[in-house]
Image (cartoon, rainbow, N blue to C red; front, side, top):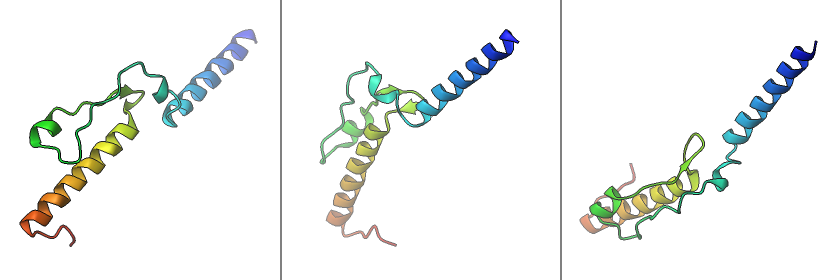
Length: 88
């Protein structure tokens, strides 16, 4: 009977840890330095050098989202300069 209780407790702890990781609770506790993201006028070399801090389950979502915002803004700027419309 004791082994059953221990097994159920272990399963609950594992479930709680997995759920916490899925919601990003562990992301802020990573000891990695902040990612060096390029400025709005990023060059190809700047983009090639982008790195993200690791997090449970991948990379830190906030850093990746910010990098995508920078890339979208840069692409839009270049398309406007070339007279290309990004809207379809």
